[in-house]
Length: 335
Image 1: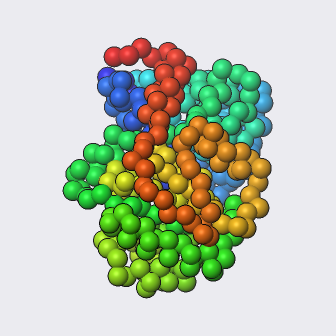
Image 2 (image 1 turned 30 degrees about the horizontal axis):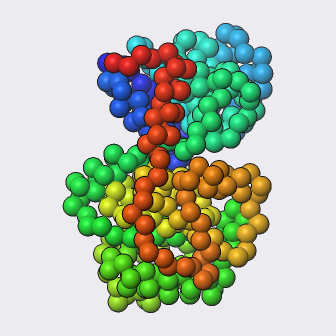
């Protein structure tokens, strides 16, 4: 049995990515996973420590790694076969541990100036370095793999439904009131033509007024599994909702919502407003998903309701390819 340590920076999205990688590897290996929170020796100096550590890693050596490790609370690395971490805050410490302890490290997310060669594998959605250690993931790993979602849905006994993930203003996306009105009309029509219940999950970014309007105007259709953020719904089982959804519709303002939806293996449609001023990198991100046939796009205004396609994407193939690349980098053989 291989022993894995996940270092968490406390950000759920980053933590889920790390667990997603561990889940991928667990498909081929027997694993024992331990999770710790990243802890600085001085909480008040954590920003300065992070910057200073990155500067030291411009000159990676045993000495600089020892200095960096001293700035963080010590962790037990005895018998570890792999360290997985995500996010810019964890990167300096995981790099230092690799240098000092000679333990393979998989780091996820933007390197924030650290070279990918400091890790066995740096997994990103875009290329940062022309180096074999920088692995480009078509899909960001998450807890919401097709198998995990299917099992969660079966455990909860959920019936088939159509899932809408609703965000709001962000990353250059701006929604008009009439666009939300058109979406509500489209949801009603979709329910009528599909004869399937509708599930709506709102988020922190969702406008409370829009959420209230949706709850009011959609009250005559089945919304049994819906989770309204501004009504306090936080502990719903998203994996089960993914696993029981026939199709997923997600507003395009959140890379995380889109990525997690895609990971489920269900057909995903992103909904976009007329007002988009997102960064070029984000537009390229969306285009990549289109090119890989992982999503379709529809305008949120005049949202066309067509016959629901009983299609599936090639998520599992992308995840399997990523797993193979990681195994090669950390030099693990299949159990």
